[in-house]
Amino acid sequence: MKNLYLKVFVLCTTVLISCSKEIDEDVIVSVAEDNFEDVNNVLLKILEDNPNTTLNWDGNLDNISSWEGLVIENNKLIELDIENKGIIVLTPTINLLTDLKVLKLRGNELTSIPDELFDLESLEQLSISGANANVQSDVFLSGLFSLSNLKELTIARFEINEIQGIGILTKMEKLILEGLPLDALPNDIGQLSLLKEIQIINGNFFEVPESFFALNNLETIALNNNENLTTLPEGFNSFERLASLTITGSKGIQTFNNSIFEISTLRELDLSNNNIGFLTIEDGIIPDGIGMLAQLIDLNLENNHINTISPRTGDLINLKTINFSNNNIIDIPKELGALTILDVLDVSGNLQLNEIPEEVCKLEDLGTTIISEGECGDLRVSSEYSFNTTEVGTTSLMFIDVALNAVIDPIFIDGDGPFDLDFGEIGFEIHEVNITDVLTREDTVDQVLVIQSATQQFINGTNTLLFEMVSPSIPNKDLPEGRTYRVRLFNTESSTVKTYLPAYELSVL
Image (spheres, rainbow, N blue to C red):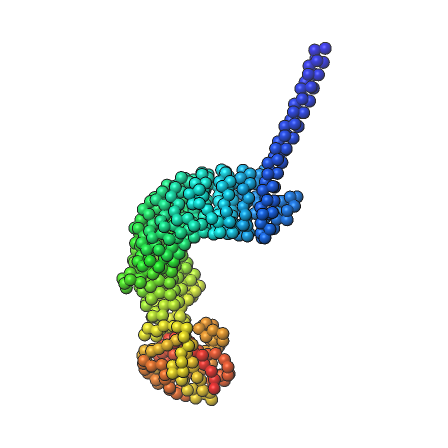
């Protein structure tokens, strides 16, 4: 009889436990559904408040898994990416998205920033822009700095002049400040000790504070288009992990910062679009210290006033791209020929550049693309000249009368003299080139229409010349009318070594 009572007790207990478990599961499912109902309401409110949004949300909650920009895990919305979607109004009920870790709002036209946004204490990543939003800086920043779990922060296009206090966000790893009219960078920025990447774009600040160099975990620095920035402290060698450094678009920067060349971990260096070398010739010399950047892969120094390249650049055997375009460089050191894995060398726009050394030209055989005014190894016009957009008048025509049953009338397109050439016996070629842009050098060997030589030895200091060249043989084809050609002068004693004048439009009469 006792065994019977025991069996009955065990059976009842099992039934009660089973019933209790089902009730608990129902409660859990119900709570989860209730929580996601708040999420649904917030998303529908965003859709309702912004009828012209470019979101693909159709309003049908049965299809919510296909709505763009949502990441849902375990029935929780953890990421909302609605950047650049034409959103104007951000609902205050955004604070109901309590599980949100990533919120991307950048590139919208928000008219206000609700304070409730800063109730999202779980946020680890936030991007936000507010060109049309009127915010009180102190209130906005106070709320922003309360998000203590932030690891990545992007603030763009707010009328905020200072961000003192940002040092409280000690978990920060990535910081982007774009289009903020900051009068100065915050002194407490050095407290962001975990920071790995920082980008500051279009600011108004004049200098980088010393505290900036306490960020010794930085791997990427980009200071772009900060026009008032004029000086950089000698502290860049304190960055022991820095792989990428970009300081560009700051016309006040006119000299090299030697501490940059002591960053042994650097792989990318971009100092383009500054005014380096503008003050003196000495400032335009790339220092020998560049040879210490043994890990460098990409080097960009375009659009400065650099005149001299250190031969030590040839020590950077890991380089794959070099951009020296649009400077005042006269000579390319032959040591660059040691850069055998180089993909691109751009020296275009250096209008005083002399002949590129044979050692460097041989890199083309290894697959290097060399971009220059003409072909690698060409002799160059030795005197200085410049291009302009003003069409040269008829008094500047250069006439070349060729006895080939055709008279060629070259017209200057964007060039002006004088040119001083003294290469011994002068020859010339006529090449057909791109008919829409005579400055685009796309001619090939089979487009050479005429190759002749002449005894004209000096062309000196004049824009108008007249000399005859008589063909010793019949050219392989006539010069058709209405096409575009280029004249090349070259030294007939040096075989294929040539020199370029600015391009001309040649019309057959």
